[in-house]
Length: 168
Image 1 (cartoon, rainbow, N blue to C red):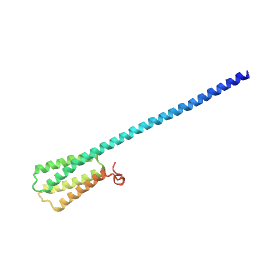
Image 2: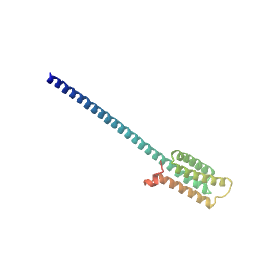
Image 3: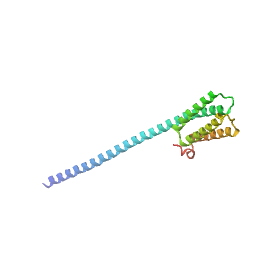
Image 4: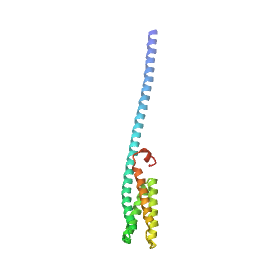
């Protein structure tokens, strides 16, 4: 009977050991599975973020290309005395449309620079509408605002972390 009882206790100990070991194995498998799912979720999130940033950069690039062309056309229409009123109006509308695209894609520094340039164009346009000639300081102001806009756009494309850190 002592041998039977010893065998019984030994089998119970083995069963208990197997249950405990199996429990730890199941828990380890669950934790491993959760880590795998979390890593996959993080990878998808990071990939989506990278794709979103790539899309935004392309949208900004397109908007900046359009407005840079519109700036030159509108500035020429305002400054050159031979420009017809219809051509100046077309250039103004093209600039405003391009400025709206820039407002949508940003960032704030570029929006502000575009807005400042727009205000300068409006003030020069008012002078022309009043029948007054353009003065040299007005052309200089347009050039300054244009340069400020180009600098703001350039900062968006800067690859140096310090230059681009404020650009979302």
